[in-house]
Amino acid sequence: SVPSTTPSKASQTCPTMGKYVQAQRKGKSPVFKAHVRTRKGAVKLRPIDYAEKHGYIRGVIKEIIHDPGRGAPVAKVQFLNAYRYKRDTELLIATEGMYTGQFIYCGKKATLDVGNVLPLRSVPEGTIVCNVEAHVGDRGSFARGSGCFAVVVSHDEEKGTTRLRLPSGGKKTVPSDVRAQIGVVAGGGRTDKPLLKAGRAYHKYAVKRNCWPKIRGVAKNPVEHPHGGGNHQHIGMPSTVAKDRPSGRKVGLIGARRTGRLRGVKKTAQDKD
Image 1 (cartoon, rainbow, N blue to C red):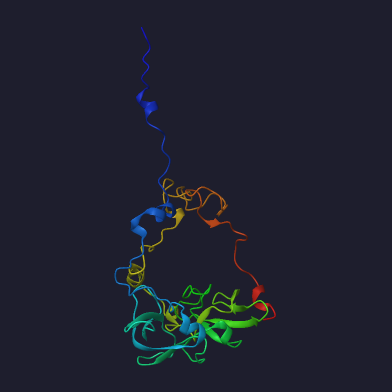
Image 2: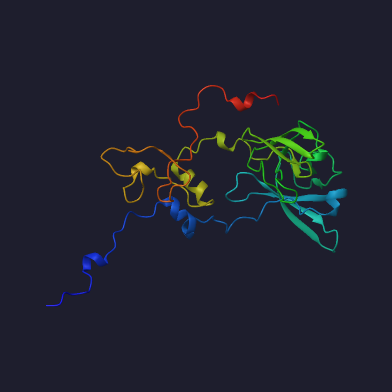
């Protein structure tokens, strides 16, 4: 008899491993997208133009509004359009001390008052600023969260750069022509009050994105997470993992330089400036 050439049913089914872990699903799944339907719009500085580069332009704060999913309030500022008969409305981050009806001045020759937007070149050392650009014209990158501010540490006239101390405590060098708002972002002290109950955490994150509650890896099954399973909740392997591991295994302390509790004085806080 001629042997059958068709493969058996067992060999047709390819062996499958565990599920995709949650970190992988966050990349492409629409389940984890930001909840933006009720948001008020992108909060940015004015697009840089001739008026800001060479003089200043005046705007008026029409209202200060709440933006769902953002800790800091937002100011709706109206400017006269320099080229057409119309008004431009911009959403800026509200700084402490802003009020409706206040005039805001943006530009190289604006005064050093809370809420005004100036290039860092025009700001003296030691000034508290917020909503700082990383590159000229990117309309705001650093110190944008509620209660955040950056400090102008020093100017380097020869290189045309400015050194900042960011809210994280780290130092950053940026071009001196980047713009920043003067003052501290409003809404500070938001995290001082504890959430106390799960319902408040639920509503806090419901307007942001699907990222709460966060289930620990050791509490899952082996198919769902590399740390899952076992008769006791334990990792059972080093918690550190290399940066180049495949995405299903890349969980835990990724590319960690050190682990454990921070002991002693933070070294970065003891430098000369």
